[in-house]
Image 1: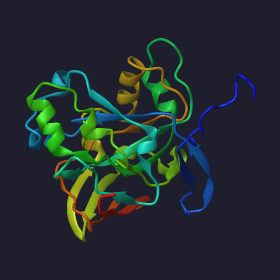
Image 2 (image 1 turned 90 degrees about the vertical axis):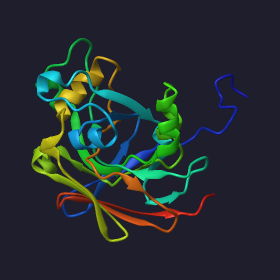
Image 3 (image 1 turned 45 degrees about the horizontal axis):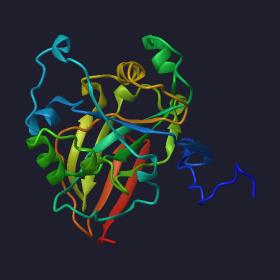
Image 4 (image 1 turned 135 degrees about the vertical axis):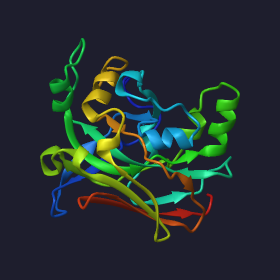
Length: 244
C-alpha cells in the first residue's frame, strides 16, 4: 500500500447544480466553505432583540458565522434535527464565488467580480440552542452548523440574474407567507459583505455566502413544506421529515 493512500473512505465534495434561466443544467459548482451573515436586515435584527443602526454610518462590522459544506441539502428533504424543540427557518440570498480573492484589501469592483452566481436557500437554526448560548455568552455553532441545515436551490450565473438588489425573497410554509424582503433593504450589499469576509478569510472559488434573512423567522415542524423564491428566477422547495 502506498504511503499516500487514503486509509479511510474520502467523503465526496459537496456541489450545487448550475442552471440557465430555462432550467437547463449547465454543470456543477463544487462547494468549499459556507459563510453566513447575521442581522443583515434591520427588521430581523429588531425581532431578534438586537440594536438596529439608525444610519449606514452606525452599522459597525457585519456578524459572520459558518456552516459545514456537507450541511447542504439539494433535494429539500430535511430530517428534524436532534437536540432541539425549536427548528426555525431563515430564507436567504446565497452568493457563490467563482474566483479567488487576491491578498490585501479588496476594492468594491474586485469584490463584485468574484461573484459567479446566486441561489436561494434556508439557514435552518436550532433557535432554543442559539438562545441558550447567547444567554450564557457562548458561541452558537451548534445552533447553526448542524446536519441538513442548509437547503439550497440550484445556482444561476450572475449574468442571468443581473442586480440582485432589484429582487425580493419570499418564503411560504404550508402555503402561507412567512417571510418577504427586498434585497435592496440589506444593511450590507453583496460587494460590501465580500469585502468584509476577505479581511477575515482567504476567499476561494467554491465559497458560498448566505446573506442574511428578513423578518418573519419562525418554526418548522415535521410534515411542514416550504416554498422559497428569489423573485421569479429561482425556487427552493422542501419538506421537514421526522427525526432520523
